[in-house]
Image (cartoon, rainbow, N blue to C red):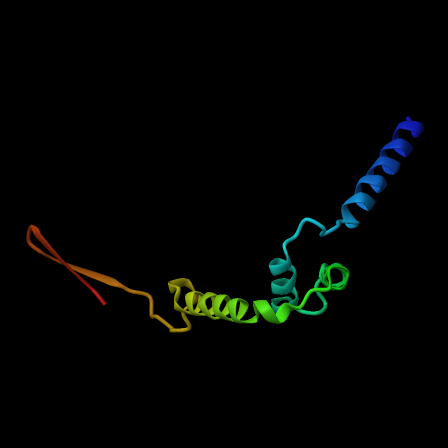
Length: 108
């Protein structure tokens, strides 16, 4: 039993270590530049992206206008979506009155 739990721990550590050493060789130049332009410097993948930029000798200025336009459109879409509204809306209430066999309801 002890051998089995030890083996399980070692295998878990190997799997975790292999996941943390992700390479970005298959990422496009544009995606590397977009990541560096839009993500904060403390992002966990930032170091690997900087390394890719140096390795490929990238000049991200060629993507500047495209990234800027996409980010502007993303912000506009996000700010105009209904769920992100900053307006305070009072909950609607419905009041009903009965007059004999008829019921009349009003929503405020």
